Amino acid sequence: LLFLSDSIRKKFGIADSIKGVLIFKVDRESEAAEKGLQKGDVIMEASRQEVSKPEDVEEKLKKDNEKALKRTLLLINRSGDLRFVT
Image (cartoon, rainbow, N blue to C red; front, side, top):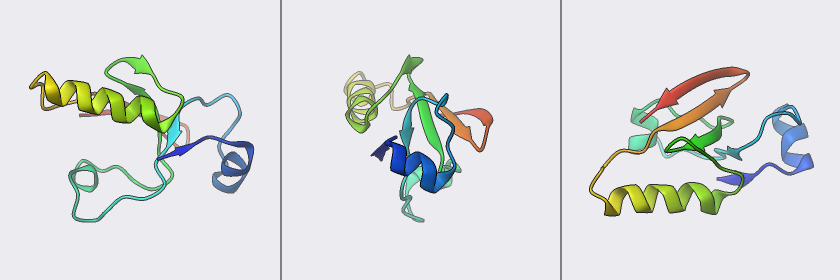
């Protein structure tokens, strides 16, 4: 996960209006890959709360796991298309 700096936005073609955290790498054997997450996706929300830095996402995942929810709802922006992933 990466912070959306100006250089990252330029490299991945992400508009300034998009807020969130970039997925930079996805292990092909991971649950994230099974759920369809891809390099270049932007996580805009985790558990219906906006995120702006990688730590925000990691904190929500950790808290939801501690609550035994076992799922975190993510709002993903993929090239302008929005989708929810759990």
